[in-house]
Image (cartoon, rainbow, N blue to C red):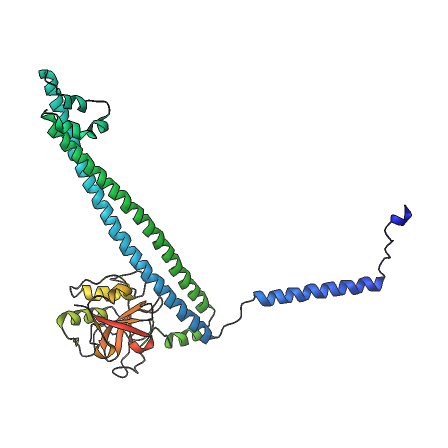
Length: 364
């Protein structure tokens, strides 16, 4: 039995215990230090913050345009659904009137003792069943057959309208899901941009604003020294320098005049005026003031009207930016545009070369 016993373990000497404890504590401290290093977010320079914020604004704008498109689609679907429901209600009322008339006919024939087979079917406990046997009713020589056939037709029409309304409702719910998803993406991107900017000092934020890639007009493009609002500071122009708009036609002049009148108004994503705008909301509102209806999103506005090259630009033209066609401004001449840049940057004048040019369109 003794041969199967575990060997007796010798206790650690005092010095050995202290050494082991010291090493264990040192290891734990080292691990904690490494963990802290891996979790701590590095301090970004203002240049790095600006690059990240610019990217977030572009991504938010792409999601904003998807949101705008989904919102427009849900609006159309809701209007269609309302119209279908209204029409179904009207037809149901007419159907009920026809059924009541059929009942009156049956009562009259019953009193006169001339209740025909068709009307007898109409009085059955299951009116849906007898209406589905319209072929038999049409063969009957009873004058009630015509009325019953009319009720059958009306019932079919109401059923078709209700089925169409259900189909539109399913599509509307899917669009509303997309709408909520795109809204969450926009708010997430803008929230992240705000958090990044909040880490900077007021002076650093001011420098970023002055070098905003979405644009303040620094006077180096077009007519020299001509400036718009700089994010809420400085003078705001509400009219063109000459006092009247130079444009190729009266409608374009009206659109440009509207854009000048919007200078200084805040950017709010999803907004179409009159107090605030996003980029495509501004261009849509400007041309709407001239009596021209533009679609809601950047990627549909670029196909509204005649496409023009950069060298052919004229005041009133729509100018688009980025490969995803996610930003738009209204060209005012001299290499400049009026646009709604992003949250925190109101409607302003900017050179069109501050962003990657993607194309232009001339509404008509």
